[in-house]
Image (tube, rainbow, N blue to C red; front, side, top):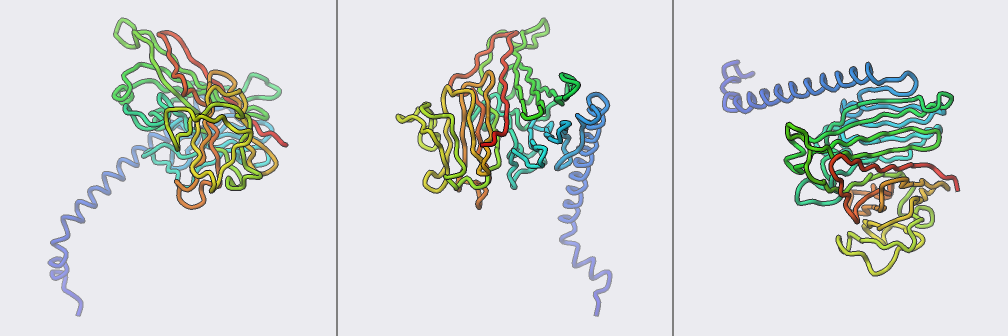
Amino acid sequence: ARPTPMASLAFASPRAPVRARARAHSRRRGSVLTRASALNERIVQDATAAFAIPGSVRFELGEGGLPKCVLTHKNGSSAEVYLFGANVTSWCLPSGDDVLYVRPDAVFDKSKPISGGIPLCFPRFGPSDEMQQHGFARNLDWSVISSSADPNPDDPEPSVLLMLKDNEYTRGMWDCAFQATYEVTLRRDKLRVEFAVLNPEQDKKGRGNDDAISFTAALHTYVEVTDAGDTSKVFVTGLEGKSYIDKAIDTTRPQPTKAKETLSFGDEIGLFDRVFLNTEPETLLHVGTGAAVAVENTAGWTDTVVWNPHETLPGDMWKQFVCVESAVVSTPVTLEPTKVWKAETNLSVVNL
């Protein structure tokens, strides 16, 4: 026979407080998510009203409901920039092929930086006693401050300029005032990114710095490849003869040998995590299709980092990408008050 209503209530009563707490937690979580969603929608609406350019620059909600900017070139190429972390997660060629790689384990809920694209490491590259690895810039929301598509009206180059300033959260880790900007420009055959940092002078209200600030930085660019384990097709050139730190062996001292002409990956190498010091402007990553991605450190950057995690990541994920990173690591930037440091990187595809 079916239990009577009273019997059902009696059976459930010892568990009711647990369910009540779960429902309350669910309601609170739902309320937080609703507020976050509404805020993100408002950010997109405000950015659209102030900075959208028809056919060139638009703003919309991306993965996880996070705001992003989409740049579109007349030739059919496009780029996507999330305001969270100022991360360029996509650079699509007119053919529809995406040059960049976003890992399948990437999350878009702000619980951690977006794994893939071009994470921006600042004010620290690598592990730090002061803060999380690679700094805080890649897990904070940036603000849109301008957009453009006018430098050449016959061939517009859409761009967006983002800004991050110090706040209570950043000063809790790095007690410095700063103003950072990040400009992403979609050219006909290149993706240009410029990172700039201002050391603001202290004003009468005590805002700003009396002294120089010091930092390291990098663009942790993930590039998609056919199979990083295929040493005949996927490899890096342009670093021959350079001194390097092999972080898989010693995180501080350069190795006694110099870099080879061709750098490859795979089972014989294992984890590839090397900082090449005082490098030439251009490094080529041969992606396995008969083409290469050129990473040009046009200005500001002094070093190049090459990373392939091999089996430190699950499954065969390591075979799908190689990171070639523009960096200033070997000698940290020292920036006096009122001064600005700028660094520029240009990515392009070279058919070999």
